[in-house]
Amino acid sequence: MKVLLIEDDASVADFVSAELAKKGHECQCARNGSEGLVAANTTRWDALIVDRMLPRLDGLSVIKNLREGGDLTPVLILSALGEVDDRVQGLQTGADDYLVKPFSAEELLARLEAIHRRMAPLGADFRTTLEHEDLRLDLISQEVSRAGTAISLQPREYRLLEYLMRHAGQIVTRGMLLEHVWGYHFDPQTNVIDVHISRLRQKIDRDFDYPLVHTVRGAGYRFGD
Image (cartoon, rainbow, N blue to C red; front, top):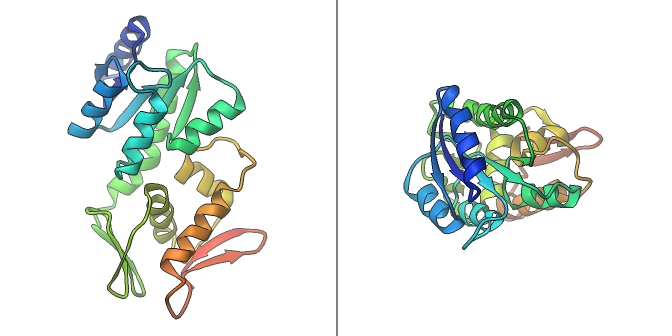
C-alpha cells in the first residue's frame, strides 16, 4: 500500500513509518494538517493515517475537506481522545476507522489493511459505471443521473448509493451499511443511516415515477425490485 501519514509527533511518525516499511508498504509523512491536505490532494494514496490533533489544521478538518471534495480514500484516525463521543465524531466526519493512542503495531496494521480491503472490491470491479433502470452512476467522474437528469450527491450519499447499487436486489442490513459505508465497528445508536437514506430518496426518487430505494421492515433496505 502507498500510505500518507499525517502526524506531528516525530516519535509516533517514525514508529508507524518503520512498521509499515517492515510489511513492505510505502509511507510518506506530513507533519501538520495543512501540509497533509496538500499531499492528500496532489497524490493518489491507498490509505491515509491522520492524527486528530494537528497543528495548523486539525485532523477532522483535513478529513472533512477531503470528503467534501469527493475524495473517498480510506482514512484511519489516530488520537489520544478515546471516548465514545470522540470516536463517533471522527467517524461521522468521514473516517473509516478510529484507533486510540497508545496502540500496538499489530493493531494498526490490521485496521489499516481492513479498511483497504473494504475498498478493494470496489476497485477490483472493472466496470466504470453502475446502471439500474434509468439511474446511472459513473465510477470515474462520480457523476450521478436519472433519466438524463444530473443529481448532486454529497460524498457519503454517493458511497451509500454506490453500495446499494452494487447490491441491487439484495437486502442490505443496517449493520452492513454501518460497516461498509461508515466504517463503524459498533452501533453508534444514532439515526445517521435514516438521515442519509431520507436525503438519498429525496434526490433520486422524489421527482420520478417509481422509487428505487425500498425499506424492508425489520431487515434493512433494498435497491431496485
